[in-house]
Image (cartoon, rainbow, N blue to C red; front, side, top):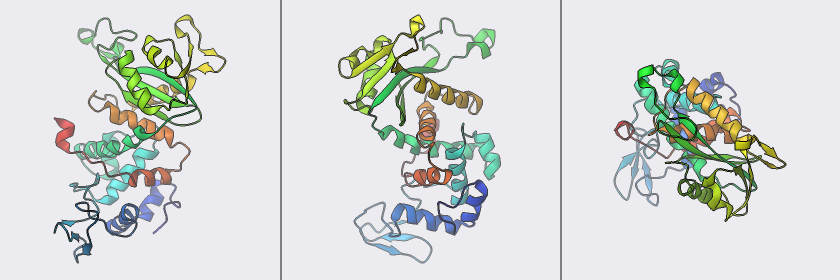
Length: 305
């Protein structure tokens, strides 16, 4: 089996994991470090059964490496999961469920479900803490009236109106990482909380003059540029980096995914944050990082209800 650092393409990945057994072996190594751990009682002694399963001594329950991960309850082979993870983490703008279904040989419904389970584990980007020089900005997803039939156009939805758009708050550390949060609106109440949770108080903030940032101005060193009067750079005060990220995210959302519901938007946003934050990592390293953080699981019912 090839080591994680040796595969640089999908072809290499398929060679590294030629069988289901090779995938199981690798996943056990990454999640258990070679020693089986019971998902029901991590302190319990574990017995290996002869059928590829394990038994938790304290609870008497049987398990395998899938239990407690995004792979639990899925009938898709791990080999197809590995391909899906690699494609989603390494593609520049993402991959649609239709394209993924064709690539790994599953139905579009299954590919959509697999994609969302993978995206659920991109939430690790929300754990990032930002410091230094941090740019703040908001954007709005949706609301393209020009693409709608005349009977379906929404009136008075320009600018910061979010009658048919979803606001997203972005925080980007210059030379570092980005964290974005879908918010209810762009009021100071909605913007202040994610900033306080994500940005260290020692950071210096840069934003436009939107009134939603007035509260954080009292808590942080804060500089602004007046976009309303055509000012976009004032020495170190600019938001060009976060605005560049919005461009990448929106091109992916409209070009690859076409439509994203408000319910699932945060997962898609996290996907683009993950890809941006890992841009210096190789494809194999991105794959490995997500595989080691695959313990978030969602059900199909929770996605569709």
